[in-house]
Length: 188
Image (cartoon, rainbow, N blue to C red; front, side, top):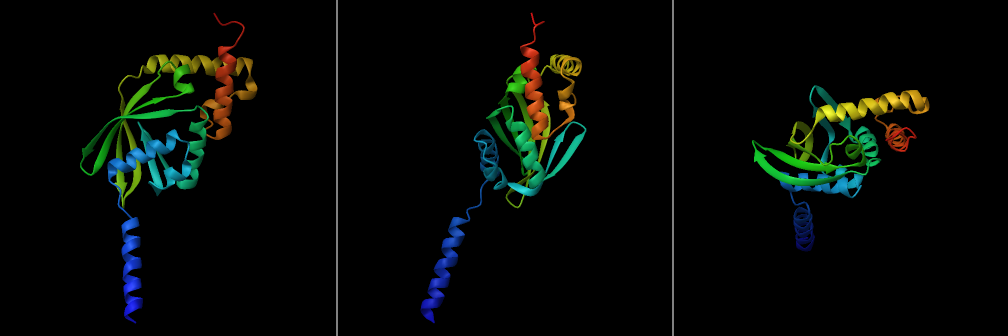
């Protein structure tokens, strides 16, 4: 009987040692590392069963399954993320992140450095709220986007609507529209 108790105690101790609680900073770092390595399993290891992304007036709640669709959409543009700074603030992290992608390059806002408030519950990321994009030129962004949308609508109507299609197919069409627009015959 004593041997069973000792084995049980050692098993519990070993399991407890393997279940190391990560700090919020470690969770944020793992989150962006997973994006950089296109590792959705790594992402699911640090996010809660539901995660909310807030950008301005847009509040987008995701389950892990629906977040996977967002992850696939984003991956088409081959983004990279670099953590510039992490600040602890009232059980949250304020992360300054520089991101680069084919889409940002086209929109003439590359890299795009933004600050995010990241919230946690039970050692998992539950919410990312965009606070500000420090170097963004939204006027240029809008001009480039509107030119692309208008040109695509006239010249490649089969791709029209890509701007609102946040599926992987929508991102593929977005990327095709960019390539066609950049290689158009009337380009200067």
